[in-house]
Amino acid sequence: MGLIILLASQVQVPSSHQTLKRTIITYLSVSIIFFVNGCTLSTRVLLDNYKKWKIHLFVQLQCYLVTSAATFAIVSLCATNPSFMDPWLLIGFLLLGSAPTTLSSNVVMTRQANGNTALTVVQSVIGNFLCPFLTPILLEMYLSSGAWYTRVLIGSSTNSAYAEIYRRVFKQLGLSLFVPMAAGQTVQYLFPHATKKAMIDWKLIKLSSLALLTLIWQTFDQAFRSNAFASVRASNIVFIVFINFALYGVWLGTCFAAATTWLEKRDVVACCYCCPSKALSMVVPLSAVMYVDLEPVELSKMQMPAIIFQAVQVAVGGVLTGVFRWWIGADEEGAREEGKSDGDGVVGAKV
Image (cartoon, rainbow, N blue to C red):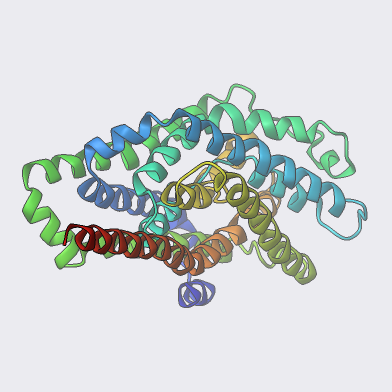
């Protein structure tokens, strides 16, 4: 990921091709991730996970209400000194906290961590389906506080119809999630042995990780091409990185502490990737659609916290895959040892 960001900082796609590049990469990469999951996940397992309504309620409350409330609290603390933080960055943090879980990285990493991938897929679908209804409402609620940083929006027109938001979100869900997922399920049903051999033995399952790296590249390529980082003071960028790590830690810790009290470990891992993760692919179009007359530099600043958070969640989530694998593996190893001991006891009694 570091090499990808370094490459994006040195060479970028021309500005005239940025929109086309973003559209192709976003749809193609997410489609690959969900096609791979369609080829490797059992249809029955997916349907069983759709029935877990208590977990769905838990994850969506965490992802929308808990994360946005925690972000609003931190933004309020950061806003005590108006000369320190750029107001557009503070608004960007509120947009980040109100965004849905991502469609891509949490699915890939849940699989790598041996968590419940099917549950993560289901939560991604539900979260992004709710996005056009909940995110604008939450953002407007927090912006109505009357804080000084909200004054930069005075005079800017807000698209209150949200028709474009609904169209864009549901189009992306249909073309990059439902269609590839259904295609993968069909391929798995028609050619089960060949699909398993291709995905597992030939390592084609790694395509999902490659697709995730491609998404990260296009995000930073766009940010560097639009001079988004140049428009923000260096001290503010450092502070954004610090706050993003703090937010991810708070969201993850809250989710883990609550989930471990009533869920099995594989479901806990799925929740811990869904709840703190945020969808940059939703934040960027939402900000552009909701505030239609902002200057490009203002829009870039608003999107900056989400752009940097994308790198933070992938970096921390990647480290956690090993931790979660060890956590789940230790439990399974203990269960095997217990079963072996019980078996020895039974044999001894029989003799």
